[in-house]
Amino acid sequence: MLRSLVGSEMCIRDRSTGKTTQQPMEALLRGFADGTVEVSVHGDELEMGGQRYDKALPVSIEEKTFELAQLWCFLSHGQHKPGAEKKEYRRACRTGKIQPVKILDVQTVADYFSAEEPAERPSKLAREEVVASIPEEGKPGMQTEKLIRTYGSVLLGPCEYKQRVFGLLDELFHRAAKGREPTHVDYQRDKAWESRPSDPGATALGIDMTGSNMLGNATTLKPLKPLPSPKQKQVVPILVVPLGRSAMVNMFNVRAFLEQGKYETVTQSMKRNPKKESKLFLRPKDFVNDPRLQVVEVIDSVKNLKEKDWPRVVGVLVQGPTWQFKDWKWKDIPEIFNRVTAFHVCWDDEDKNENILKWSFKILQLNKEYRGKDLTVAKLFWTHLEETTRKKQRGTPKRKRDGH
Image 1: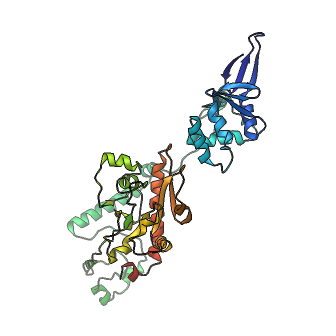
Image 2: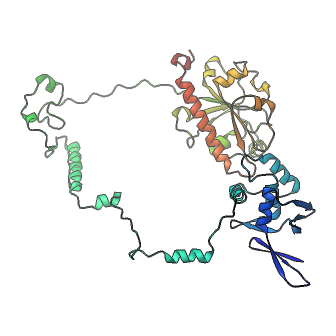
Image 3: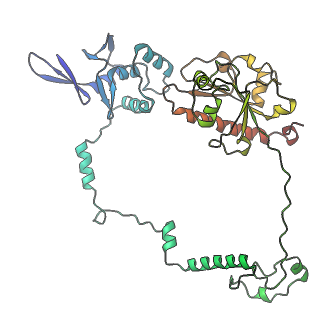
């Protein structure tokens, strides 16, 4: 028997008779997905529907090609069902040396096998016939949409406002250059205002009793210069990261992750720059709008913090062990998380510390395969910190905020 894949069907040719029979592969996989077809493993082959197929056999799903082993592992772990556990699926892929379905293709494969009937997709010839049947512009049956107003059409339209606006701008320019009043400004106000007797007191104070730009020859006082506002010292918030080198984020890689949205492991960062700084300043201008978080100081030890510095601590990255908080001002862990916004960064397929599951704070999960998610997780960090900082600042009295 010879087996070859044509489209999404398996062609089986008998050497003795020369006849070819077709077994729809999608029907076998759909039967395996809903539990009506059994699949058994025989080394590098899978037995399904009474036939054995190579695990590396290519299968086309929604114009995308997958290996048969990929789809078998995907369906056997129920990844096409809502709320499926991804941890066991990825562990099984690593154990069986099977390439998992890419994250961008997971929803496509899940929708394909969770649907009751396969969606009928038009062939290439049918799509060409549809395109050919669309009438061209200007021919009967073609509904055209006319855009009435755009920025360019307004400026190029037959309006006299351009001369009025440009003339007014020229007049204001000459007025500023020569220090005189405009000569042709007339807003068509009620003429009774012009004949109304003026108040000497109001005129001396520079108050226009007839309306703007209609004061005539009345004395105009020079505007008073605004009083200089007292300079306020900017309070730089503090973010505390773990001291241990086994943490996902510490002083070595925090800048690349939270300022640029690119995560690299601590080992990679130490190879690039083995010197650890005692403190550094992040400027996440691309992630935050709150002016209070435009500059953030990052430290990994709170031993040198003074009493006046503790109100500036707004965030902490939690590693898991309780000894991380032994030098903190507040000794109770729930009180720390109530005063400071806490985060935990981890891989989405690894086990978490028992304290992480017990404590309540924001968990940020990274994916080892899809590194484009790093930027999204960094944005999520700053968005959550910005929201919680705003809420805590709004609910804290000013005297207490200033640390008095």
